[in-house]
Amino acid sequence: MMNRIPAFLAIATLGTVSATAAADMYKTGGGSLYAGGNYTFVNIDDGNADADLGTLSAKIGGQVTPLIGLEARAGFGVADENLGLGTDLSVNSFYGGYATLSAVNESPVTPYGIIGFTRYELELDGPGGSATDDDSDLSYGAGVKIALSEELSGNVEYMRYIDTDDATVDGIGLGLTLHF
Image (cartoon, rainbow, N blue to C red; front, side, top):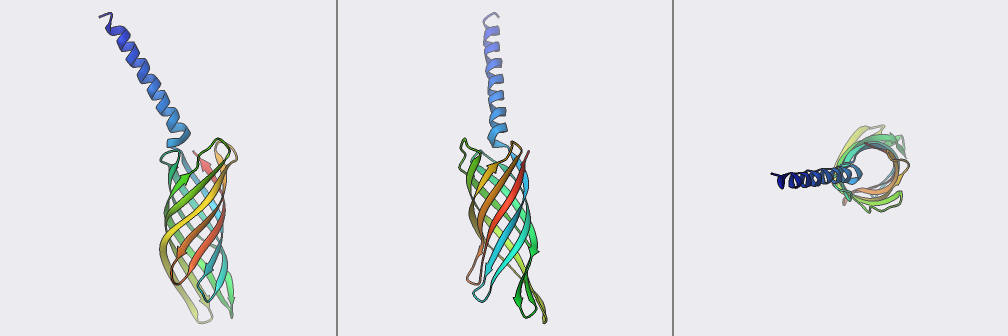
């Protein structure tokens, strides 16, 4: 019976240390949820026209591991482009799902890559009426997160949202993210 008590205490201590280490690992990397927003300067080139638009988007996501994250984004246009002759081009909406790969390091600056799929809906509004067009494509990009505090970070990123035979949609975004 006396031999069992030290063995029991050793197992209990080891279990407590393992649980604490797992909780610390989860806290510092593996389970970080976040939400934020971006303003993106969007360029649309369809061969005939080159338009510069602005969008606002919200994002929610989580770090699956310290290196890999998953997130969803959705947004809408806030700055249209006048193409002439009373015709405006605007972004009605867009949404997508993405995976991120972060280059975790000890500094407050963390580079990351992003890949996923985006669906964009554009509207052309002119004297003859309006028309919408939507497209989906593989999206990719790269950015930098800058820690402003433990709970808040800023980001700058480049994204290629759509790249088809008909058009390309690129964006440079600035954002803020709140980490939970």
